[in-house]
Image (cartoon, rainbow, N blue to C red; front, side, top):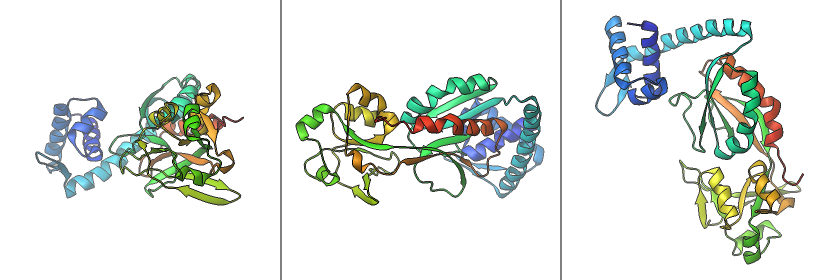
Length: 305
């Protein structure tokens, strides 16, 4: 038995909540992961996991062993990282989760420079607007906008993005161009951004001279992915409120027109977030440092400038 490999397999099963997701993240057959855990249990002489046809639960002995073996695995990563740091060449795989429009318009255009600077880092992007579980999904960090709602996460601010309200020219010809936020309540059609997990629509927000206003009316169309949300506006389905960087190209091409500019809300903050319990590897540290160099300027793209 390769005890180190078995410990890593066991830790991933605990974090992923099952053998299937653990095997996927380790790129191993389920049978191999299961065998490694069984051999580890036989070696220790204790049951670490309780298996049923529906779920896997961690025994009290398994919880104790998980805490101790993860400390050991982090120490081993520290040892490897210290040699990597001495050579100045961070290496290994980095898993980053990012929203659709942020990936397309901000992160991906900047990545050639990062990969040229750090050629030994292999980057795996998860592109989705859904919230991920950083531990069970085995993600090193996520880039997200908005307020932070988990004390178990560590966040570094990487910039802010202007929020703009816009619609297609054809829509404005048919329904008129609103001059005040309250006019959205009078026959206008809104395309709402809807959180995929909760189904809750994000209200349209406005601010002028320190006075904040929220417009909450029934939307005609709801979309839970940022690129599709913008596409709905270009198609003339209604007004959207979105990030300036996402709408920049469509605004410059005339496919969209900004409205209610004097009532733009405060810029939206963005953070790179990682678990408090996760060891910050050299590759994760240089990625976060790099984000703070050029990411903020591209995030702050203002189509009016």
